[in-house]
Image 1: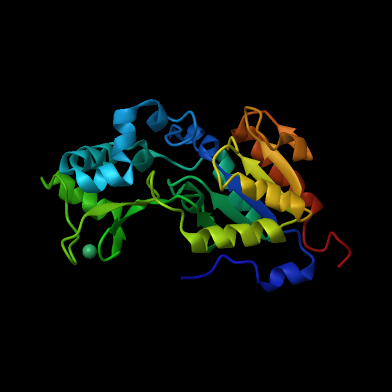
Image 2: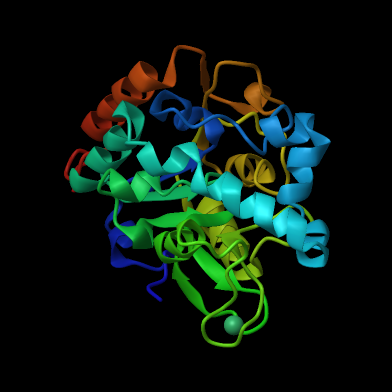
Amino acid sequence: MASPGVSGAAYARGMTLVAILSGAGISTDSGIPDYRGPKGLWRKDPEAEKLVTYDFYMADPEIRRRSWQMRRTSATWAAEPNAAHRAVAELERSGTPVRVITQNVDGLHQLAGLPARKVLELHGTAREVVCTRCHARSPMAGALARVEAGEADPPCTVCGGILKSATVMFGERLDPVVLGEAVSIAKACEVFIAVGTTLQVQPAASLAGIAVDNGARLIVVNAEPTPYDELAEATIREPIGTALPALLKRLAADGAPGAEGS
Ligand SMILES: [Zn+2]
């Protein structure tokens, strides 16, 4: 797997590394509600929360059957990237070194054209399934086709084990390798933009503090106040779909290659 780490030569050339931490708020314009945040749909509905909680899922075939039905009807499959996702991809194409750390599992940054190696998915991806026994991965679309064809709880085709979405369920740890790379990016970046996240879920939220501790400028783009606003150079409350493209355009103009006297 290509590493989205921070050892690339681009940073040595004095270009501004921009880290973008994105949360549910960046995808609401694409029709995807906030499921897992502190005020998310799952947290407000204990029955729904069981469907995405590892121990319940593994213990109960009925929970898995309902979970597959929920995945089958997820808003994610019809969702298109919006102006904010496209603006991030555009910033990357403009030559500015960009790394996205996302709490979202919808894959919309990549669909907008951002290379997958530039995206760290802290909570995994809904677009793949993984076997809980042999860890084989395959596209979600294939598993959903089996559900459509009548398999209520399709097992792993390799070993027969229980399949799950390749997302981090409640009760599961974040991938330590992914988290380690996110910390490296937070330490190395010069600008850290938190967008559409309440910065209330750890350890993702702490990345903002790590970035500031290591000298980065913090910019918060979110409708509501966050615990990190006091550390931020700027807080932007306007709608993300217009605010982020405008912000990134300014950033690209200021931090363009050659603009720092090189
Ligand atoms: Zn398996």
